[in-house]
Image (cartoon, rainbow, N blue to C red; front, side, top):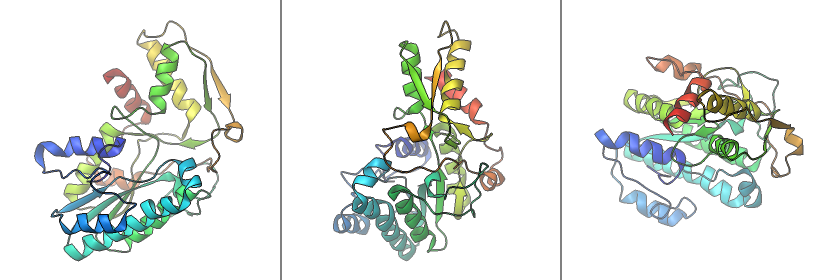
Length: 281
């Protein structure tokens, strides 16, 4: 399993460890940017399922280093997928909602147009295609992941609210969050059930903006008595966020109906997942 020092990789490694032998492949041991080193590590690897949540995920980082983004997010997954196919190993590869084109509001289906405007999105889309070129593999798209493994937008909002600091959030970009506690449960089902093809894994509900997510966070803290009053959250248009130099589509919330059909219990609403996380941490 790659990326075990990241949010998704760390959560998966912990979830699978009790009843599986997990071979952790952090960057120091498995560098996707180094083709020769990666190939040598694969030659020594013996496994039944190869899980690849690793990637270059920062949009501005990918904008500044497009060659590295292509290597890590597109070429490396394709090489792993080819190796896995030769060895009879099933691969579960992670992708993103940033692969979609700019479309009207709504939930993006797996067959909706993919024409991403960013280097990150284009490299991740190429990685999807390279992995799925080998039948038997699985690509899992996730979005706005939060959990205890690594600070996220949710943690930033909670910290600022509890510190009495000013809070602002983009209010015209929409997606759906994925809580790592739920995500790991879903991946265990997909791994044990032998799922293949493209699956979109996120919590359920209506598409939410970052402002919606921030508002739900502070309201829950207020309801739990951790905030005396509800702080005002400034609304910021996506176009005015100067930290975002790479282009982002505004509507990328994913339809998770295929995932729901593979689970005994469909993914819970993102509001319930968020409340669960805030109560646990």
